[in-house]
Length: 230
Image 1: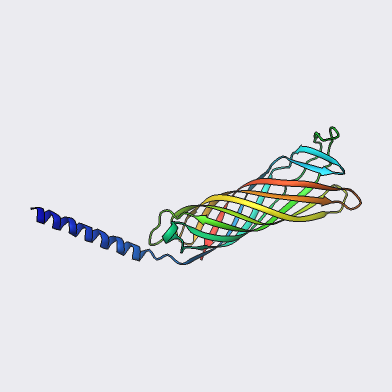
Image 2: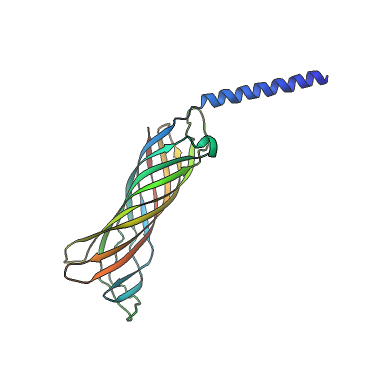
């Protein structure tokens, strides 16, 4: 009896190993995963301070605004065997309008001040490095049915600014971005995603014939969109 039971257990182990081997062979993961994405959502700038002509004002509110953008990226799947994750990189372009509304009374080092209204348009250009955790991997979806991902990046932010009745000014500054999100494949090559990102940049605003001003723009963006994978 012991011999029969041992033989059955050995046979089950062999069959199980064979099925696992066949499953691994059937899931053929491509070495690279290219994609292009478009997204839209809303941006939420932090309160900020600005300095001009020796005056430093605190807690200036910038307007929330729609945000739109696009990405082109690549995932590399080779690290999956060792680390269980894929790594990637993407070029990110994000546009939003964190206007400075008029009528604010702010505390400063010289007492209360009321800055003029300024229209801002900010465009971030950057390169992000990414990591994703493939979930729900099948032969039809070797990259996973869905995956969470995180990323860090840097680049530049171009800010244009204009007060009523004046010429438009512009300034480009180094910028930093951190992000995280979830992507779900709707079809084999089409996925939907939701993402949160943080963008930081510090600008110097130089108006013609007037004093310059230093302004930091920190903003959180909640966006969603579609990706097409090739």
